[in-house]
Image (tube, rainbow, N blue to C red):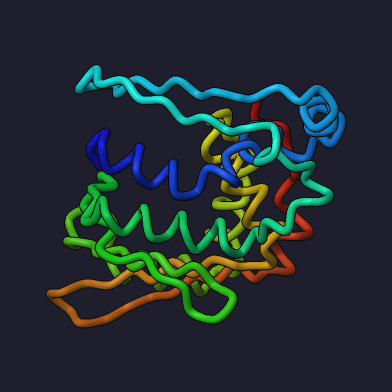
Length: 194
């Protein structure tokens, strides 16, 4: 996504930007609500070095407790932004070809070129039980990346699960790993990302 498109997206969703910055810290949100201060985010594109600014007035800043911001809306917007960057190379012969929402699940459709991770290998992992799902949850909990921690937090709040659908063009087969909303709620830790 180029800088102009990014700034446009962020300005359209700026009412949610404070929630992203404050997380669930109600005291921080209340401090702004009482102070009457405005908030300004200065953004610089990593590659283009273009600069942008997103300003929120004191009236636009609401406490997370008062804000009717919906976690599921955040997930829908996140999926839309991910779709703009497809296809995405995941390495080991895997590429993310599609991301979409189906019911209460975010679905990742991942193509394998059968060079490293093959359909038979994935079928064996599926037959072994929940090792693959547990590994994905462990990755969420071990991540130190702010965006990934934020995503995991909102995944829990939205009551959504994840499906990874691996497919191969050469064999026309697919293998699906499902992490239910209940599993995410029980096993993915809510953490601070700032």
